[in-house]
Image 1 (tube, helix red, strand yellow):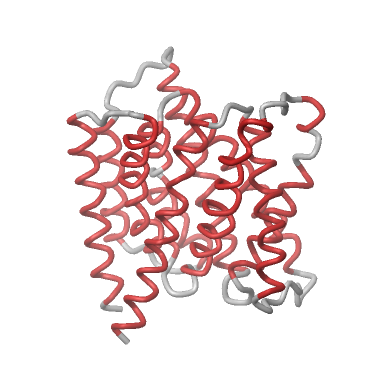
Image 2 (image 1 turned 90 degrees about the vertical axis):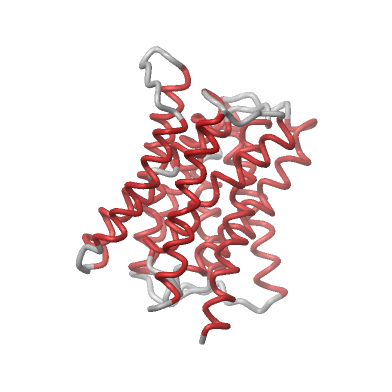
Length: 287
C-alpha cells in the first residue's frame, strides 16, 4: 500500500516537473500567446494520438453525455494556457508561475461545490499558506505596473485551471485514461484556435519550433497526462497542493536557462510553499 502511494506521489511530482517547464518556454518563445497555445495543442494532440495507438489506449468516448463537459473543460484549459502566457510575458517566470499558484486556494474553496463534499479546513489552511508564500515573493502591488497586470492574469489563469480540473475530476478521470482526456482537450483547443493562424504573426515558428516541440510533447502531452492520471489517486485539492512545488521547479529552470536570479523574498516564499507540499504529502499518505 505504501509502495503504491509512493508510486502515485512520484508520478504526480514528475508531472509537476514536466509542467513547470511551461514557464521558461512560455517566456522564451517569441510568438503571441494564442499562437503558442495553438502549436502547443496541435503538437500534443498528434503525439497523444500516436501514443494511444502504440500503447493500445482507447480513444473511444463511451457516453455521449460526457462530450459537453469534456468540451467545456477543454475551453477552460485553453483559456488557462493563454492567460498564463500573458502573465509570463508581462512579468517574469517567478511572478507568472507564483501568481498561478493561487489555484490551490481557489480549488480548495470550489471542490466541495463540485464534488458535494465537506470543506476540509486543513486544505484551506495549507492553501492560505501557499498564498502567503506568493505574497512574500511579490508584495508590491502597483496597478500601473506590467508586473501587477501579470499577477492578475496569473490569478485569472489559476481560476480557469481550478475549474477545469474539478470538471475533469467530477466527470471524466474515473472513466477515461489521462492520455485519452488530454487528446480530446488538445483537439478541441486546436480547432477553436485555428483562426489565430490567419490573424496573428506566426512566421517566427521557423526559429522557435524546437522549443514549441518541447512545450507540446514534454510539458503538455506527458506532463498534463500524468497530472490528469494523478486525479484518480488524490483529491484535486491534494494534487494541487502537492504540485505547488512547481514554482520552485520553475524558478530554478528560469535561473538556469534565462538567468533570472531569485531575490531573498523568493527564497522565503518558496520555502513556505514547499512546506505545504511536504505536509500535504504526509497527510495524503495516511488516508
